[in-house]
Image (cartoon, rainbow, N blue to C red; front, top):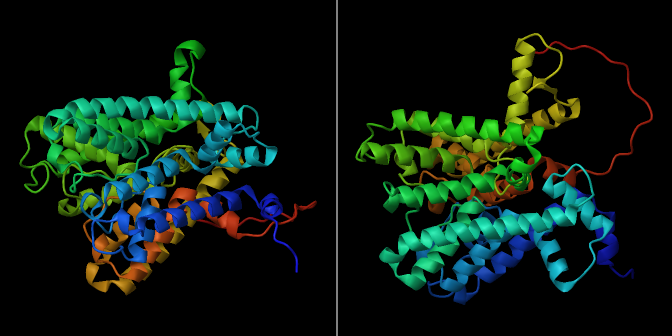
Length: 448
């Protein structure tokens, strides 16, 4: 009988397969820990499906919950969730590299290839330094967020609780996870400028991507931003502004959301909702009580999500930007995609359209299955739930705990695919194809 060699098996795997399996292993470990009796306040243990759902939601930095985090989990369970969020936010290879640096192990070429895939880097050089920067950036930003929230909440919660809550929510916000310990997210702070601005700032920074944050930090020295950073910042600001204005006016007179707030409260809550809608899943007004036009815009923003190599999900801002720019250039009669006086590579356009296609197919399939499994929940709530899971957002109209095990399992798969990436999952499931030494004759086909 042939002896199984893990190292040899890993060497034969594609980087996408290593990432896909790595996240799966973390989710399984998280599920086992959350199933322990010491992880829950309830008698015995939580059902396996709920533990798996929670572990996936935390690792995929989503925030969809089937059990109230503050009520159903002990401090041990909450810390497990926080660690899963931190792991999922930073990424598999970043955390693996951190362990390697601590124990003094050398990072091999194989690990660097997988790191390049996950971190979205164009070259293999300097990857360990990139990881060091990511860890430093994370420590600084989460630390600052924790301190601001601690000082703000200390009069309300007391010193020890405010420190713990500040740390948990800072990690959850920066990693775009949306898990909270208050039981109703940020609804108690719908007019609290400091809390909402601090949380939203953490969400934006986490959603920009570590490369963009580094680029901004070095702007004074370099006097320029990379083309990627310019695209990310422009699309991000445009989406935040569009969402802010739209939500402010559509919900302005809704007595169940912004209607009862002061003008300042309306403005900051609409801004917070626009920011959190794309990736984070925190809410300062009840999502289930939003008007239908707002829910539809929320679905679009959740689908787009955060930026590449960030802590958020979705198809990514640059993917949306590239496809939108391609359509605009096509309308203008240009044969190539031109953005900010630069030409976008053809392979980038193909990748962007493929990602959107795969994402839409996954969302459509899941929505059909959820409507069969839970027909009483209605189309819009289930469609909203699926897009929220794929975008690793975590917003919900309130149906998550009531879903059947089939629907929960489909959302687990969707959250996993949303975090790892639809293209990565597709690549991981496909077999290697030898490169061709020939090309077929080109033909034209009518489209549109």
